[in-house]
Length: 142
Image (cartoon, rainbow, N blue to C red):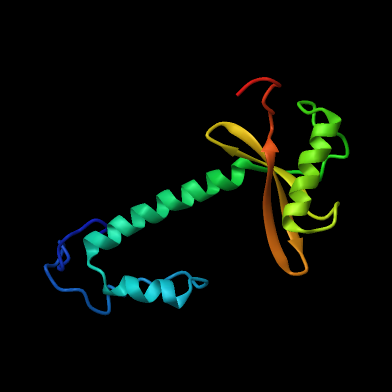
């Protein structure tokens, strides 16, 4: 049967699918809990789910690409004053209750603006803590 066909018979022979038209196999690493519900869906919904899956995969890839990981800066970022940077970084470490130096500082880009996050794991627990925008507000601005 050709992709996109809405008919249960093959156009070339008019016969119904049989052993010459085997059921597609899911990816080897696909979890069964995700595959089983798909087999009960009609072709139109499966096509819509497939389109959604492609769009979701593209979105997730863009999200991963927008996250630029770096080690914790040993120097204050150019946009920040030393004391202010140390203060916001200390607050982030206190918020997740981990020792200074654990994790890494990353930049997440959201709607075209960069934000610093403290990310990593400590004692088997993952953490992601907002620190501050890449470009801090200027003094006296709202």
